[in-house]
Image (cartoon, rainbow, N blue to C red):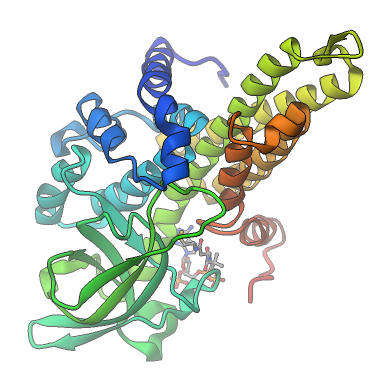
Length: 384
Ligand code: COS
């Protein structure tokens, strides 16, 4: 067991930290206010390789390990969760899924373009009436000649309106339940494929969240990802990666709350001294530090398992649950420390709080993570 980062890990963290501070942080508040998708940030990120971190170099990625992937994700999440979300979907849900389950032709066609940001991808699992119970998808895929016809709607799809590529999960054989679900790689140009951006979100205002509309979308069988009926397993495997990325991003938010709170509390005076000198403020900061460091170690543990190719579903759910809850508590504490200023976007902590909220919802709610964790312990299914 080794809790130290290697020199390579430290170097990649420094690279990501510098990029995040220089290129992402300065525009974060304005993008949040104007709900502007961070296309310019992604363009700058592409040449460094951050859009394809863990994808092997032969497919256009950096080929970094999962610890490095978490370090990059944490640093980006530290300054802007909207950018981090865009990246988590692009890498963990789209690229890694194509890498794992795609044919050689699909990998060669899509991965290099995804890793350079030439195309943005999205992951179409959730539907207007299907969230946690992902086995009950209503979107259908019907065989049609040498291809398929897809019909349905997908909801809360990050990158949905800005993407040229969508992984879509659809029911191809309702008699088989979740074993009828089949995955497809859809290119946007297809007739009948539309999207509608969702506005008025509590947080992640500069990331794109959309509804996808699929009306008689015809695709060739070569657009199928994996085997017929393998879609649910593909989705769950992808979510093991996505949840890891969310957890790392949440650690970044929690760290940002510590940094902001330390800076503010050592300057702001009350009762004749910096507020950091008051015990109840010191306690808030100490709690944030303890929980953030615990969350980070949980992420690294899951990452080590992934790097070894060992099962990591349980450890990923633990990291995702703990880090996302810890980030929310840290953001709440940070607002408390900032007082009235924490309630305005003059300081970033209110954005951290709003953005942190969705980590407890997307890619499996906190409650779903608890059910997964408990099922590992008891062997008894409390899901459904
Ligand atoms: N990796 C690979 N396969 C998995 C898996 C994983 N992490 N988890 C489950 N599976 C497989 C199981 O092995 C099982 O395979 P078989 O059909 O061969 O038996 C199948 O998937 C069904 O699994 P399970 O019995 O666990 O399904 P449940 O309905 O009990 O539970 C939960 C599934 C609730 C865990 C799942 O629906 C879930 O994660 N829901 C939340 C969805 C979500 O995160 N949505 C966010 C969308 S992305 S923003």
